Length: 76
Image 1 (cartoon, rainbow, N blue to C red):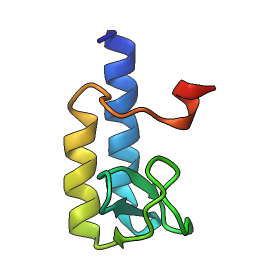
Image 2 (tube, rainbow, N blue to C red):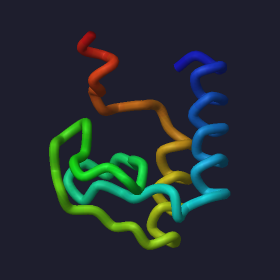
Image 3 (cartoon, helix red, strand yellow):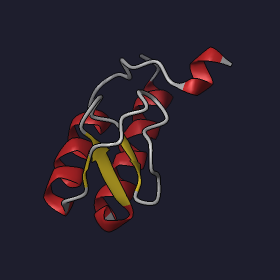
């Protein structure tokens, strides 16, 4: 993984962890999405965990590892 990509993911995770109320974790694929979304853009699930502790924990996990999921940007 490129070092800049790793630092970008860590920076995004820090931003999310600083304001967890603006996000929620998809229970289908563990992606973090904005709190206003009705469906996950990655797996189309509609079940989420909006608790701040879960968002912060998941941001730490995702920010410390390489991206493994396929997103809409990858398909375009």
